[in-house]
Image 1 (cartoon, helix red, strand yellow):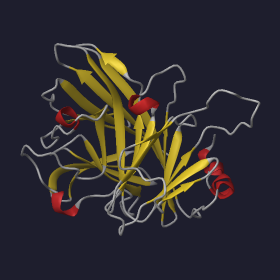
Image 2: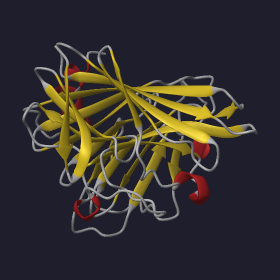
Image 3: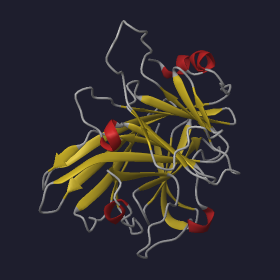
Image 4: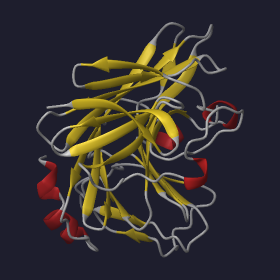
Length: 301
């Protein structure tokens, strides 16, 4: 059974806790839309929360805060970093909540719906972008989960096919100007890419990929967070055709899924779904074969 209660959390007085027998989620309504907590029932937060920003509201400066947020790609300073420091509208739905922001100066309004399973340790998150402006906006929904320190991201490649069975490329990998492929936090496997979060490494790292498998994970202290998302073969994606990205610095690591690039006309909206699951007692893999052994059986694919 899904239970919803109003609570205080992290210095924000107007939060809502959404729970079933397995999971707790907490959303803020003083800022956002943000899912600021995700974890096992009565357990620790799997998301990172920036301590010196917790409880802040108002102002003209963008704050990372932590938790899970909704952006729209491609990343452009003027619109991507529009502050979400103000109250959001909250509405109870059958199996969770809907959070709706104010319209941003660029004309885009954001909403997040949380649909919590009544019986499983999984939740579906619907991300909505609405164009309340007067012109068409090229964009993609961009869902970012900010994970706490000390874990490892696991990202699958497209299926390996030997030469000369296939002569055309299978997928793209995008690098940023600050990406260093030789950085020790990376492991480049044949079927999986690993990115470790390291509190002692101050230089950021980022990767984008066309993730045809539609999932990625973050494993920390035996707890595996998995997000699943759609891959549309016929679609065009942002950032040189990426539907998944991951970023890390010394404070956190982000798992980011992206919907297709669209020309969003005035009065129209786009939707992007993720499904999150949480597992305990998972061994940390260091090789492709260990991912296949420890993690793939949990995904139910």
